[in-house]
Length: 598
Image 1 (cartoon, rainbow, N blue to C red):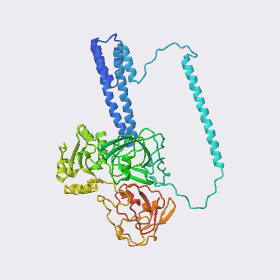
Image 2: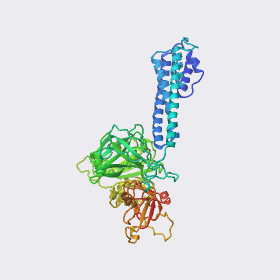
Image 3: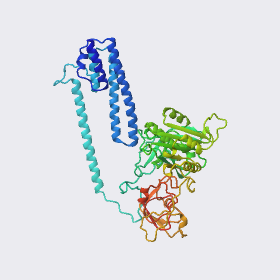
Image 4: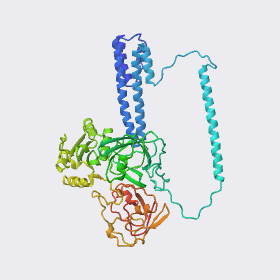
């Protein structure tokens, strides 16, 4: 008997970790009782199975979140299958422990455990049938109710179909209203689909009853279709507000309908907020700071700027439960871990937000590469995300945080002081010339960092920068790269050619000698040489989305159908955009006639 049980316990282990051996079941079923040693062995195997299942659940849950964030349906399905397997492991292990605790016989333990492996429920005792045709009265009544429900649903379906057909007949036979001989109305803005065909008109931002586009928390908000492929527009609800520093707050947004946020994004993307403030539509872009692996909410971290209308509005007016109008995600300052084997993140002030989004995401997916964060702040009070970074650095040995404070006198700060220097970079980041660098911060700081990185020998193509421009009417910030001017083409250049030249190359010309036609809106208006396509569109009430107005965010991308334009800044345009005659409406100016797809 002892030999048989020794073999039985080994086979029990195989049943716990893999496919059970058939010969084990007769041996366990024939045992009248269990010795203390045998009971301990079974209990150990059950706890091991629970532990393995718990680990499998955690791993599968993480993989499922990442697959959902990336829109990978195949990986999501595989992760869901692993999640179910882990739950089955835990369920069978706990069933065995419960059987031991209840003092069940070995035969009953084997039976319960075997049913757990097959994902079966414990069968109820079989009673002799006391109904008709060998069925109990319970089964007969249940079948009758199900049949009645099915008949009722079928009747409702056919009734609805009859009403729908009658409605279609009435609509098709109705006499159409006579056409009004006038200019066609302004059409809702359409965006080209990925195939080049126009997409359905995008729904406008939902109107809100009070100032600032804030709707009562009790209102249900429909999810709007994307304004163009990959771009979502609608309202999100403020779920929480966190104070990061005295003048920086994080706003956590959720889907007002519940469930995951209605779009996916990549670390480095930003959202564009819009609000009616003092009867003026104000828009501003803010980088997403939360991890792209987190689908339950999205966070933006916003600094209160004295000259920033929307930032002051967000800090002073918005509260938990409010609805805010957002559009996105957008941006090209992205890093998801596939672009390089290591990354150096250099930031200053609130410029840490896109870098923090990358850090959070890379840690969530257990990215194996080295992450170096070099951050500069005015003082320890202004060190955004300090506590979280200290925690993440303790948990992830591949994350290296180096921070310097411009002013640290009178504080407990023990780290570097002053601005980020070439010596600090060389000491903090070994072999920096071989690594990808992402740089985000105030314009002056970014220009200084570019010079330092060049002195260290970092190739310019390895440096990616991010900056948001000032409000309407301001000039491009010093940190923005200006497009290299090209020579104007000879007369007779093909229509639709986008020509990047500086305004000084254009001869003086009267303001009413050129015009612009907005193809979708069917409007033709004068085009002064000193006004951009976006400014003329706003005056003509032609809808073109925008955010930064300085050629960086790319929200105002518009297709040029005919004519030639000049653009001082075109950072937001990719080579593919330029090949397809895409222009930035906020930058495009012309001395000749234009036709644009707006």
